[in-house]
Length: 234
Image (cartoon, rainbow, N blue to C red):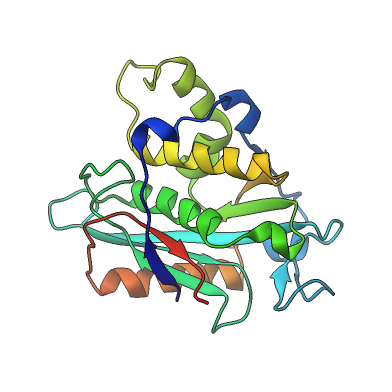
């Protein structure tokens, strides 16, 4: 688990200065690969704990993300978010309940899509990944909403004034804008963010660990009110 600290987030500041510059890419698995074979657990000379580093490029690290939601979208819904960045059971898995309010301070319905997106934001904000000699953060998610939204759809949304192709308001706009701001933050310090669509049924042990962590936290039924930044405990 992680510590939490209050985080002031201003909605007007959440829009990146250059959307095109910070849009990320999706990476794909070859038919013979799995997330675990492409990003095996390893302990390099720069690591204090094992990471999931790319087998051909140790500057690329995978973080598994997941979510769980009970009573999706209903008035009594509660959800949780999780991510796994190391096989270390004590320090490598983080989970937290989804807040009622978003980074702009507005209240939102609790949904699984929202929790999946929030998990990614939590993972990116958790620590200064660049200090672990990471040049590319690869977010692993089984949510096509998250992966395709971050790598494809958000381009159109921003061009259309946050409207879908049908002319409707984009759902979870506050979290998408927060995520774009995270992309910009990492881009400014030379760290790329990429996405990997993880097969739900064959995502491997660490993907399942993220799922179990999210389910366990969601089962507690907690729904915090305020959005808070999830950070590594000292």
